[in-house]
Length: 258
Ligand SMILES: C[S@@+](CC[C@H](N)C(=O)[O-])C[C@H]1O[C@@H](n2cnc3c(N)ncnc32)[C@H](O)[C@@H]1O
Image (cartoon, rainbow, N blue to C red; front, side, top):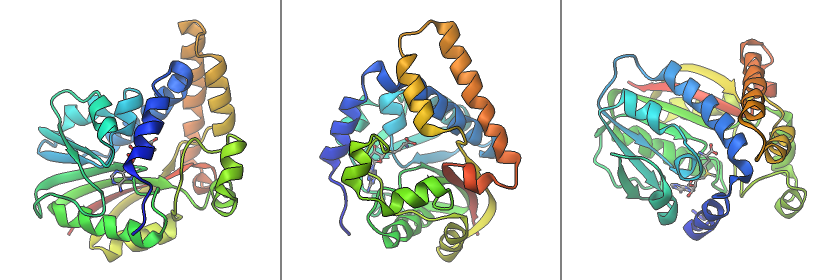
């Protein structure tokens, strides 16, 4: 059960406080917010857990959308400085490892996990974390999960190339780990006891170009920044195509505890 140390994630979050990647993060947050707005059960309240607070520590994240839908939100992260930096007014913050959750069984109405579980070194750890998530969700409760999508050829290639080389080429922003494609993910989600309700792929825009352009436009006028967000938002139309799992950076699952 090896893991990237929490101090590594604290350092990444510190580094990401600059405005350099803000525009890209705004786009990424907008895609995640749209997914939650679509998938969180309508009229839901109750107690929800978010499995990491990186998005909220470096940009706006999905705090507003989650707070709108839930009566109470617990935001957890393994990295303490990420927890402190997160702009999540009214949320409870808990430092914890997603593979050993310090919560009572069946104490949440839903769990939102946006690309937290794709930083482990093995798929066994993904299954272990999902089993923990299943334990803490009440029967009938929800899981909304995204992971790097191994069916996307860019992620598949990335998974076999050496990390040092990827980092040096600027092709990955931080340490990435084991992940799976839609078929394996569906199996794991079902194996731990969830009923798979829906599956899709999100974030279809060309990522390397998106990050590069976002940096160049970091101090551009609000008009140009708005145009960037609109243009990148349009790539999400590829979700409607049968090729969605080849273009989407993340595979996304909506599941319910039986
Ligand atoms: C890069 S990020 C998450 C990606 C982000 N949600 C996004 O979509 O860009 C990884 C986050 O997960 C947290 N994390 C890593 N391993 C964890 C673990 N075992 N348990 C809980 N949080 C973990 C890190 O501290 C960091 O905040």
